[in-house]
Amino acid sequence: MFERFTDGARGVLVRAQQEAGELGHAHIGTEHFVLGLLAEGDSVAARALESLGVGLQSARDRLVVDSGRGPSQHGHLPFTPEAKRTLEFSLREALQLGHDYIGTEHILLAVVRDPATRGARMLTELGCTPEAVRQRVLEVAPAAGAGQAERIASSAGRLRVRSGSAAGYGPLSSRLAALERWVGLVPDLAELDEQIAQVHRDTEAAIDAQEFRAAEALSDSEHELIAERDRRSRQRRPGPSLADQVARLQAEVARLQEALRRHGIDPDS
Image (tube, rainbow, N blue to C red):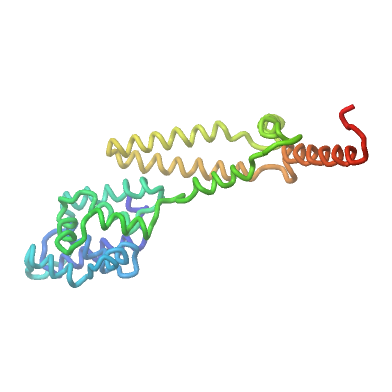
């Protein structure tokens, strides 16, 4: 899982250990993750928290009030079970947003995923509810593909044919597209699309079952299949498609028919 962490996310873990050690705490918990997130000043998570009025010093002071301070600790500090679970949830947060990496934003979302974690409680004490944190993070780092549906709908609207000799273009274009695939002018991606859809469903099922290792492996497979689909889709032979050529011919026929009518000639007779 850690190979998916961005440099910023890895920096958070390093800074969390430093903060825990300097405070004399014998472990790294989700409360130290919050300090690490804030210490990684240029990160998405730090910007989200700072925009909500939470700074590093105020969070550190809050933690000292809650947990005290002792002699500095040196060397390796273990993660608490809660912290380990939070790191696992960071993968789930990334997958649910369609991201193929784990960044500081995903760690923050994982911290507030369970309001009972020490990190989430500390943020609440500082005036940041889990709901407010999640909303702000999603504003800063939206899910992958946001707005894609609108773009697809807009494109589809431009392809609608209103009337005239090209009224049958839609069904005809579908048949011609199938013909192009059959003769090899364009690759047939239907089977690959089904594989991608199945792997995506399997990934979602693994996430719901909290089988994160399986979800990570499936997610990798999905991205490989998507990359292969993109590679195949670029193999189309140059030049306009059969459907486009037929559409242009139909438009030209309609233009000639109108010209004949203007000269008193019925093109249908």
